[in-house]
Length: 474
Ligand SMILES: Cc1ncc(COP(=O)(O)O)c(C=O)c1O
Image (cartoon, rainbow, N blue to C red; front, top):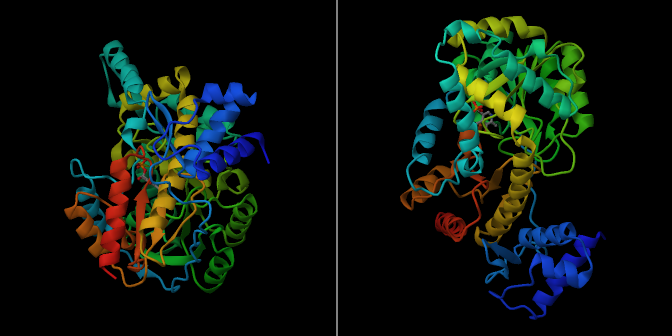
């Protein structure tokens, strides 16, 4: 047992024995470090662990307190999700209307945004990036559209390439095409590898931006069984590839939305090898790559690609700011088509956001910011899972995210998540209904919850309300 785990265990047992009562303040980090002859870092880790177990809570400027209602996380086994088993037939995709109308209502003022696809904007270093943007706008008064013709601003491209290198993924800067968010990157990559009427393999469930890209192209989707911890079932995909022509496969190997898993390196390698055997382009959505909870930065499918078949898409929307909507593609052997399509699609990506992000990356504290949010998301994921398991109806299961900021919740089969969504909306709480994540209208009794928002009594109350509403639908 590590030192911080031992300390957490000791404090937990003093709380359980009533030495510290609910609502009481426990010794400060400094005091505990002195009393136990431990480093501040060790104590901080112990307190974070206790917080994630729902036993203590931090109150700004006041210290750490025993929670009045401890959340049971340790003793109760949280049931795991089972792998999906979609019917492997290709289907026309028509989910955008549903997604647009739910996203519109998710944006309503003052609603508790558990259904939001974006992280809590308060966590973004928005003011700092804006300062660079103002300075750039003041400095440069003459703008021409030709300044940023595809592939995009060279300084931003240099910074993106540096970031990949720091994360252990060397890339060729000449491969980068800057886009309007990952959304445009995904759309252009799909357009580069297929045509209307083609079939595209996707994970099941899958993030709706992938389905939108398929819908926009008039293609069909075939949903492949996906394991909640291991990712897309490579054998099931191989079977489909042996039987029919598939134009591309779209996956999210790191912290998949909505399942939250990280594919192992072995599985990533196996998927790329399978693609190579079938000459199958893979569109890799890696927008959560920076948001890992573990110690090591995850690899990407791109790292294993030797034939230029992986079209890797990412953006700063989840890690830095969604307001500037800057993304990019590393399209492998399809780079020239993607660059041309980018030009045909929107000509350029706006200049100031590209330059402001480039300057932020060069001069500011991206890594520091990321370390902060990763820690927070990991704690809040635990708190949300524990709260869901405590207050949702018997039979509920949740994902076990290893990064990112969304939790996938399976409710008992009688519950219709669209109905739950409507009821929750009346209470000014939003959730993501499960049907948004399938072309086949599956996952009726699933919801996606966002845990990036600061853990407050309001969030806890909102979850308890959803739990009650779900019970009322049984
Ligand atoms: C998993 C995932 N992929 C792609 C996107 C789209 O990214 P962007 O906002 O950069 O276009 C989102 C946004 O919510 C997302 O959550």
